[in-house]
Image 1 (spheres, rainbow, N blue to C red):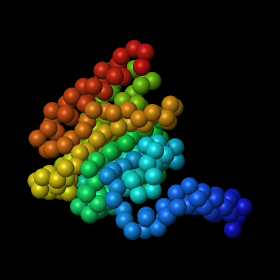
Image 2 (image 1 turned 90 degrees about the vertical axis):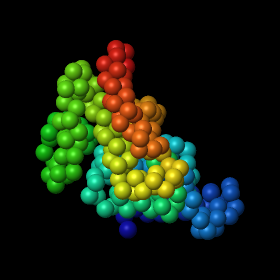
Image 3 (image 1 turned 120 degrees about the vertical axis):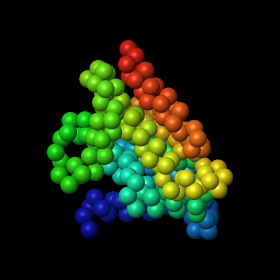
Length: 222
Ligand SMILES: [Zn+2]
C-alpha cells in the first residue's frame, strides 16, 4: 500500500482511539442503532462534508451525495436513499444542499463538455433554461451563485413530489424538505427559505423562493 494510503489507516486508528478515550462505549452504542433525524442530499464536492459543516457526529445524519446535488425522478439510487431515510429511519428533516463554486453548476452555465457527466449535468441545464430570463437579468459575476440556489430549489421540488414524500405526507408523517446553500468561501450555510412541510404549501413557497433568489443576487454589496 502507498504511504499516503497507509496514512489514512493510521489517521483512522488514531481517530477511533481518541473517540473511545473521550467517550467510552461510543462505537458499541453506534452498533446498536442508527436513528438520525436528518438526511443530507449534497454535492460530492470534497469541500462540502455534511458532518463537519453541521457539527453532527456519526449516527446523526444520513447522507446521499452526487454531482451537483441533483434529484432525478428516475434515479433509483437517490429515491432508494430517500425512501430508506423516510420510511425506515423516520428522519424529520431532509436538506438539499448546494454550494457556491460548484463545478457541476458552472459546467451547466457554460454548457461545457466534460464527457459522460454531460448527461447528468443536462438536468441543471434544464433548470437554467427554465429560469433563463431571471438568470440573464443578473450581473455575470453572480449568475453561477444564483443558478446554484435555483438548482437547490428545483431539487427540493423534485424530492417533494416524489412518491416517497407524497405517501409520507398522506400518512401524516412529520418530515420537512429544506433547501440550503453552502459557501465554500466562508464556511457558512444559507437557508434558501424553501422548507416544504406539506404538499399544499409547495407552489407558493416555490414562487417566493425563486423571487428571493433574484432579490438576493441583484442587490448591490452581496
Ligand atoms: Zn458541487
